[in-house]
Length: 279
Image (cartoon, rainbow, N blue to C red; front, side, top):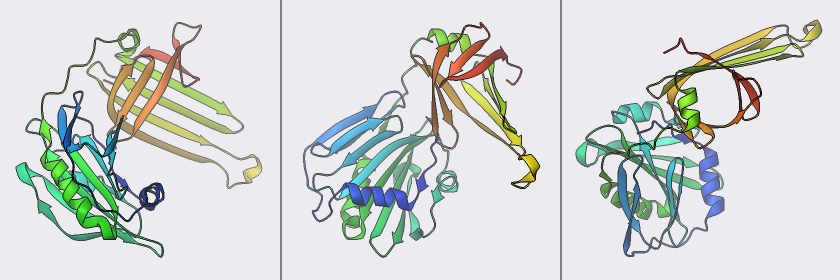
């Protein structure tokens, strides 16, 4: 299962509050079973709730449009690791102490008060017997937080883990890129940038970046430079290179052929394809 960083920001709350009209309670209903075979889990949710599935997991909204619940896989081994990688925007406060759930899971609540609204987010972190687990997150206004908590807890309790489905046979691009080093370079107007992507045969990758430059006449303070590195897992979906970073973000890069045999295009940018000495 993949690792996902949760970014708890005011933008999340504003999106929720502007997208749904508060005022009605959560309605009871017959349940539906939703599943993510690729990540090896399923769960029950009220059948009257609207649900959508994307690359990051499921998003559900109750009929009264008072609660948003997300269900996402994770690859953490402990609740502490989840908290460590959860990024809180200024103004959010942890409410009380984390509470125990079944099978080693935990729940935690954070809230934020502004002049316009009082928002509450409840986290329910569960763990698979094999690896990783699922994070259920409920977003609501304060007056609906009790109903949101109960609904999300019920969804979290219903999670059943299985074996992730085996990936489909490797595409032509996956076979061609496995074990390769992709190199992007740019320079111009006093600026340079380079990116190295080491795609390992085992499905993991290392990405390093570097940039720098100068401004003529030191107009903006002279030269500058920066570098960074990230890790994660990679796969190919059709003609797209998918980079799943350890921080939970996902990069989708459309692959195109170029005239030179040692080059490919990623989102229109030229990358050199080289032997991989990084893994």
